[in-house]
Image 1 (cartoon, rainbow, N blue to C red):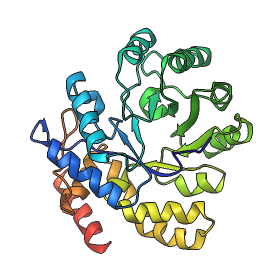
Image 2 (cartoon, one colour; image 1 turned 90 degrees about the vertical axis):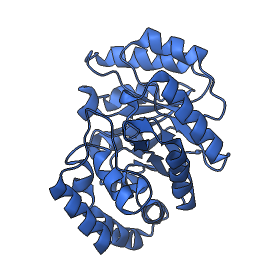
Image 3 (tube, rainbow, N blue to C red; image 1 turned 45 degrees about the vertical axis):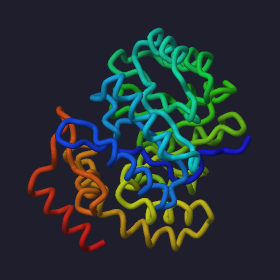
Image 4 (cartoon, rainbow, N blue to C red; image 1 turned 120 degrees about the vertical axis):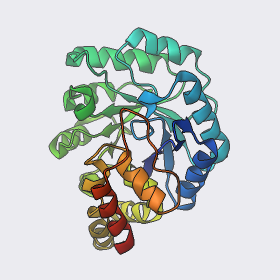
Length: 291
């Protein structure tokens, strides 16, 4: 099976104007990413502020992105994580997946399930879904880690095709890569770890910073995938200064600020997130100018 999710995926921001979704700007962001050479788009993930977007808005966001992509790149829907397995399975069974190529599903948060609970949760989702599942392991948000052993067990389900590994643990990613089922992929959930994960056998990244700099980020990832690590390292060094600024006051507050400075979309976010402080704003302005 051809892996459609190799290279640079982008966890796309959801643009707001004040507190309302700016669908015109969303279309512009889609074109900005595709014109920049990204390989696929992930809508309604944490960077897309999915937790503050209503069910009705979520559907409109996906429909807008589907319409604007026009089949140019694959689309992953990131709004299929839940700590209520039964409700999520029911949602999947009733959902219209036309134009959606895969689901990105974060492991259950708050409940702190056992590894067996996480395994059974994902198996239920995979059995129900008409499109492939990409696991999303992000302990910093869910308060529980999906271990390498659990991921490897899940990799043998025919409808579970890969994992976005955002544990920050490169050794764990390597354990998965060594033991997972044939064809199962590992992609980085951390921009800063993406080059190292690719060199360990990963296929790419689902990026935050690529919202602002899709061309440069995609080129960097492509260089590392193709073994041109010296060229990749040059771009990595240039982009590295951005990483702390992107997350120090919340994601996507940082990257939306960079995008506003670049004229891509407004920096507005929804509570409980806020715009960055004046101090951080000045720092991001300087970084954008220097870059």
